[in-house]
Length: 308
Image (cartoon, rainbow, N blue to C red):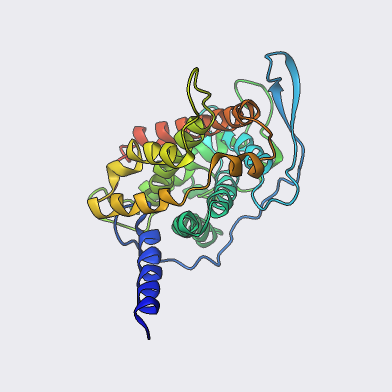
């Protein structure tokens, strides 16, 4: 094997290793990603928001982008379906949102796509736990499971059909927390394969992506638009970098160097200008923020923001 071939092989091995380290800053347990406990339910390809971009009331369409594997319309749809009751997060649309975010990262090229493999493994962990928990007596479930599927105190209506499809231990963030705490599956001092620990890693990554999209939507008052590479690096440094080792932080810089230019993002979501990108991404960021804040409160209330 020549020197160039050896170097290429070494780089490939390094990238695969870095992908596994991305979310948590160290080697994690590996799970089979073949388990798919939840099937995506939403088949709508035209989505509506409660207000127009100009502030007027009425439906706003987010159309499908032909020829793209990643669909911002599907991401937005899943995000809107995720909040439940007054303070909970439904796990099925939450994981479906991550499925679409993984496609988003994979579209950014092989360097960033390797990172998405680790996120995919974490969504598989929660899906597998949900499968394994099926068939447990309903008496073991927490009060939030019943309240989510009951009449809402705020609206006087029941939740959407998506909300009632899964009534098991892992059908929502708060039900998962309640069940895992009561079964002694959460260890506050050592690493475990709990859904709560896995959720925390996804939660941290969601903040990184939220901040990146937020920055990508910004329109400077004067001067040139900053490169997506710089924006993603800045978002990372204020979020995930706080949980990573020096080695992983340096490795992340390599992934950001390969980030596509801004024109690629225009094509990815089928817009023609920064103003159009701003309008679309601001809606997505707002939806992510609602999901993030609800998850943050649930984890914080149960002292789970620093699970090892």
